[in-house]
Length: 255
Image (cartoon, rainbow, N blue to C red):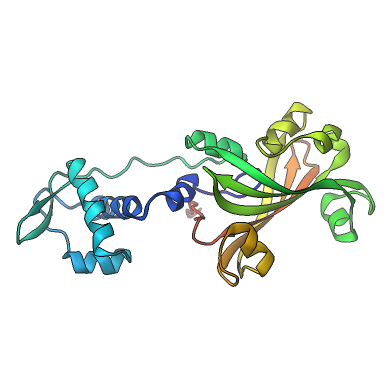
């Protein structure tokens, strides 16, 4: 789970910023591995691949050219495309189970996190906020609202409320490039766990403007309460992700 967000695969976010042909190449490679296709296996016709991947013939050809460069597929004139060499399944990915900040996730994926700060001020806790944060109504809260970016691509809008007394200096911090979790740790406040819910909505006009998407476009909304190691409520965060730039991955198993 991210500081400002959720348990997510940042690679999926990164792919949304990749060229469409690169995304198509990744999907073809993954399908070859998933189906365990051996050397010499024929790929579906280009028309079918275009339909499956929802790309143009030009985009598909560029994706296939990349796979040819990587030695994974080969073309036979008049016959189609074939697997050139077995594609081993990707090694099992150990998804981070720690509470990880948006910035830390970006670094781990060799990407650059940044923010457009929309609001950065102090407000008083409403009755609902006070109940969730286990503080008296009217308690000072730091309000931090940001558009979160990965490699300058607008990914989400994050609206966070932090109990101000836990880290007084946050009111003077420049959050355009700074991680909230790293600043909290500087004050000796260690985020430990989060309780979150996720739901789908449609973007209103304001959110659409911040994310550069169409009004009414789908967004995934994550609402979470983050706790300290002492299990004291630390912050509330609502993050609205552009639906085509975010993918949730998790692991489920029986008892």
